[in-house]
Structures are given as structure tokens and as C-alpha cells.
Length: 136
Image (cartoon, rainbow, N blue to C red; front, side):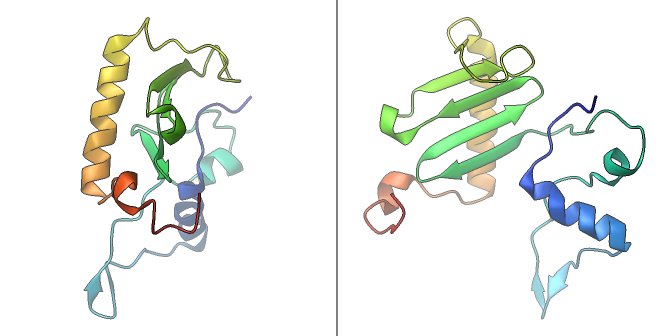
């Protein structure tokens, strides 16, 4: 059985790896951002059973946020006031049992990782742009 977390951001690194190509550092003289994700080539082509990911995954859309790191997934939805929910994905794949209150240190750690990622990636506070967005 294959284990670990693959994500949409892994597609480009996987394709670059298969093509034996290097992601460009610049495009028409403008520096590019570092390509996120990891190549899944070894996982797809060998008996390797574990996705090797040593970094957290983050996403945000319309004020909804999530962090996935190891067995933990922290989520908050804009509609519920960004109250956080924490799930142990190893034991609760369906995300049915919120264990945030039992793991405040994990919540704190993942929230700090999210804040750092959001700052580094210029994630805009949704309250500032929600009236301008066509997605609701």
C-alpha cells in the first residue's frame, strides 16, 4: 500500500523529473518563484511505498484555509468564523472527529506554520477582497 500525501502541486515537479528538465530560474528576465511540490516519480515507478514530504502543505481559497503536515490536518472555514478543526488523518481519514481541543500545541504549531506561509506567499486577507471576488 502506498502512503503519504500527494498534492496537485506535485504534478509539475513530477513532469519535470520525467522530462529530465530543469525548472527555469527566470522567464524573459524576470525571476520565477521556486517550484513548490515534490516529484512523485519514484513512488510511481518503484516499490517505494511512502511519499517523501518533509514540509507542510498549505492552501487557501475564499477565506477557507488548511494545513496538512504528517498525520495532522488543520482546517478553518470562513463561514464558521475561522474556528479551527484538527484531524488525525492516520486514524480519521473521513475527518469526522475534531481533536483540536485535545491537541492545543499541534494547533498552535500548525497555525504558526500557516501564518508564515501566508506571509511568504502574499496571501491576502479575504475580508479585504470578498466584495471584489466573483467566487463566493
